[in-house]
Length: 398
Image (tube, rainbow, N blue to C red; front, side):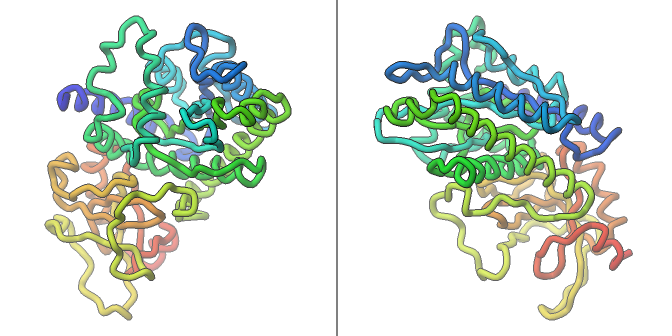
């Protein structure tokens, strides 16, 4: 299982490398292509209610959301994994997005539960399921592979494979961070614009997200097993409201990515308010600052000289990944990198490599790190671990 997972990670890394290189030739962090995936289809009805099927609701909302993006964002190319009632295998949905070099993947689904009172929306990113409910949702969505012609290609990938999921998220690096940011934006729009119950951002091992080489989410727009919500979901006007919320979240995300690429903002808008809390979070030594683990070997490059708590200084590091799971910063967990530390911030554990006092020094380390984590990028912080704009930091350092 470990070997197969490793092969998958290498495969995704290659796809991510070419995607990033292609983007670098234009506007590195612009959002130009979005793939909208209507869950299920054809011989796969998805979840079923008393009078309707998931595949039809998902398709209607997907087409409406894509139409709004095409109409109002003429610079964005919208691609659908399906536009009719047809069966598309899970791995082919990811292939469509990867071949298009998409900047974002949105998979739209309808939820189900044995409890007929369950209701509301939730949006998932790839990650380890924190509870049985999340695991159940992932398994239900993954069960479609039983209808595919060759399910053997998913060997070693499952909602239960926590090790592979954690390694996948580390390899995805900034993509995982951006996925969580976009998921939070969708949930906020569902709540504020449509008035739906917010079940928050969740994580679980979805096969449809596994091979995507870009920020990706799976959003559950309501429960078809709730009698009232099923009726609500089948109303065309309500579907349009949901589609508009997804469209507005997309616009929020596009603005965020493009402003960040221009150095106008440095923070991730994803916060504890729209992320489902992990059980037993690691305690922070002070509520005023993020927790830093820096017990590993020092970076081979020069590090900033010790300073008093009141003395101000700036350091540069390379962010290599982010996620809701705390991982030991040992070399075997980070492709042999021994100078890794984490900062707990925005409800995430953010992993960094190296710590230098000048921008030039950190860029010397960057090629080695990017060869192992293609989406890695340089960040600057001050002595309180507050993230700074690179342009601002570079003006103050050599």
